[in-house]
Amino acid sequence: MNILWDFDGTLFDTYPAYSNVFSQVLGEAVDKKEIYETLKISFSHAVHHYGITENQIKEIDTLESQLAPKDIKPFENAEEILKFANKNVIMTHKDRKGVLSILEYYGWDKYFADIVTIDDGFPRKPNSAAYKYLHEKHHIDLAIGDREIDLIPAKELGIATCIFQNQHVNADYYLSNYADFFKLMKDFTHS
Image (cartoon, rainbow, N blue to C red; front, side, top):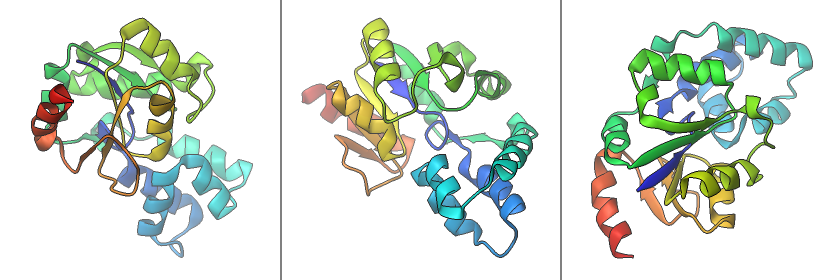
């Protein structure tokens, strides 16, 4: 099985750290839980929702770049799936340096045959260009993400979809935790 992964909120639980960064920039008057929920839709949505200025975006970028890899935790049991897959690839809006620093910190860089980041020049999700590139190169069987914009490109290309920790998105498969992945795979192989 060849799996295309989203990074933030799918492989790594990055949203708590990002919510803290936004909270530092927006101030304590804005509820962190609300920030978290807004970021889960998309970074662009959060920027629009809070009317974030260019200067605030620069401040957010600076604070995010100061996060250490140890501040970003992998989701429990995700590594077992990475080991199981024939091939894993990532498509993320995160920059390559940030992705690699986290993967290398946890020793997960060895699991990925390809990584497409914002640095590669593809349009942002939900545009399917990066997914198409990865699918043509690696014959993707399943795309896993935590937001609707992670699955729209896969659906467009006829790739099976799995949503992680989000029951509000239409997907072929749903996972609340990665311990249930192998139960899901029994259904996948029989479909």
